[in-house]
Length: 344
Image (tube, rainbow, N blue to C red; front, side, top):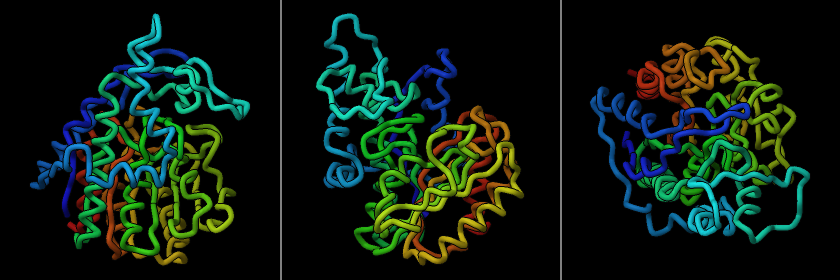
């Protein structure tokens, strides 16, 4: 297994985000990567750095899953924001088109409200470089699998599965798991994304909802009373060519590892019907009981069982790091999962 990580990801380093109306320390900070990289080192594995800025095809691949105006927004918004009199150091919207407005604005404040779904995605001066480095890591892992690796892991922060075609949310800006699937589709005709993060992968769902070539499945805490709230129901099954190719398995808040593994079997039984040639695992470690965003109650040993079950899929696999926030157990949770996938 090859593992990829770019230290340029640290250039995106938000200190706070808005939680229940109040500024709070952001759990999505460079420290996350330090915990995960240390655990990888203790396994005796090394991290490879992708090419700076990704491959020559990264921007073109991103344009297959995100709109051109959204990509332009991410790259240019901070400079345009700073040019406004009295602007804050971080891009943070104060207006959103919640009623479904149809006019795309030219003003930076309006564009920020259009593209930044919530208040968990502040953008700093160097954020885009860090965001792009995260995507480059996912791209490199997927390329290595296309070139013959049986599996590869991408240490990505910021994460990506809440990022839709033209919206950021939940700490996510570019959808790394969708990007990995896009790279895999260049070799494989049927690709699946299995999302085992605590939260529903709403951005991934939106990107592929009307497509039948990329199957998307998400196992997550029930969104009726949990982020991202507006997506994630079991009745969301795809549309058009994608009808039946989107599967959501919501779990009651507080569910333990035993319930999680039963639900995973349900999800994978539906995956069997699709018969994928390659799989992306959107790996969240935030289902652990001590995670700062806790909504489920898995123990560290449960991640080994989840990894072992996914390792039995016996198809080329890209593991893309999604959630999992700083706790004493974070590194151990990743170690347990990777040992499970490898069959250690």
